[in-house]
Length: 189
Image (cartoon, rainbow, N blue to C red):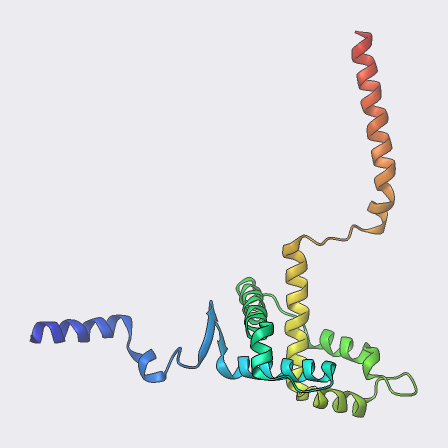
């Protein structure tokens, strides 16, 4: 019996029992690499989505209606996809400079005042209405920008430079002329 207890102690020492005492996984909906989606994060996004839908429908949406629409699965799927992109960006060591995000926010027409310039009070009012602090909004914008860039690189979205796009028809014509000449010279032989 002492041998079994000793074996268990050694096993826990090797593989770790700390996660049990720290509650690892108890408050986690999903884990992608080192990125965890907590119940609180899921609940916050779920409640925000219900509010958005309720505003669109001009009446509150019940949890039963949300379940029937599959809102929970949609949110979880979106969060897992975002976490996967975040994890991949972390693995690749990618990042977006804060100055770039600040400039994008500054240039966003939604945050312009009557004079057409960036309006700090309008910015703060709109992000507060959306349930964001300024820091959380900037962080979320950084993550979304990075995700969009990574997703477009993965999906193969590629915009050819204007010069290359303009040259495409000429290259095709030159190739066809060359192929015709080659074909004609082979027939002549």
